[in-house]
Picture 1 (cartoon, rainbow, N blue to C red):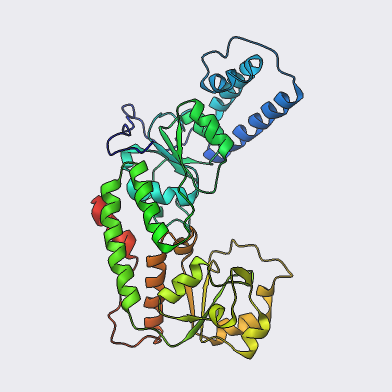
Picture 2 (picture 1 turned 135 degrees about the vertical axis):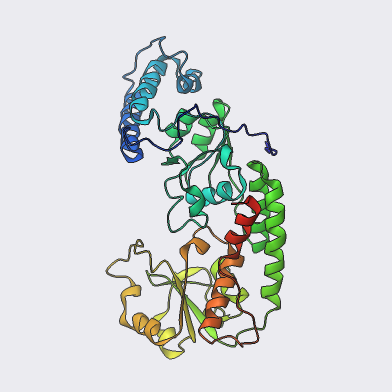
Length: 370
């Protein structure tokens, strides 16, 4: 079902209450562990057949979802809800609205949903991987669990990589719909996903304006003079993006030739050390180095001194992870950032005008009047 603007009822908070977690209540991290512990106990009990029958759960929403298939086990599900309420009461009071479960889903919700319709965003919504992190301030955060979905009972759940089809089916039994955008195989697909996601959360008008702007900037990038330099993409773990990946497409959209094309590299593979030594690139482009959260094993080629020397000796452009964390959703912003940094480093003819920083975010702020 596609939700139209106004179809999602705005969340009405009682007078004097705020949708932030109150300081006197357990934190959302503590609540998460209460949910995890109780849920695991329930699952083990169900699998062991240790559950008896009881009618006290007949009005419990989660029990209703299970009643059809496990009527004799419904009372324990009610106990689960009671136990969860110890950790999440006050932190998840409102029903209805839109709830996103991961930081990629957060971007769709934060970009297109009215703030009054946002029931909750993921705990990563304010992190460095979130392009619209500034909009998540003050919103309720969740850990992306099905228990939280069933407790909060939003009208719509938006997710990308977190969650499962089984969780979607369970939520649907309670009338909670789930939107999962299609996998984007091209830059055009990414623009289509923006429109479809916006329609789902009631922000089709916002998407129309944004997509028109993105297309104009995309055309400008394609028409810009090519940069006669060879670039290589590096990750902290020593991998590179070959042909057919969204990162390689972004680098070429920014105007560079790529090592991947020259060497016939396809997909995500370890960066060939010999190739880098025999035929070194002119420019190094990387991402996720600054966050310090990417695990690099002791055996990773990313620790090799030759790669470190390459980054020290060659012009290096570090792309913010928020541009690349969610596939190619923000491919225009990423390509513009690379081109802008290349201009700053003197790699692009100075006939071009420097672009403004973070145009998608700035444009969206103007549209939202914030």
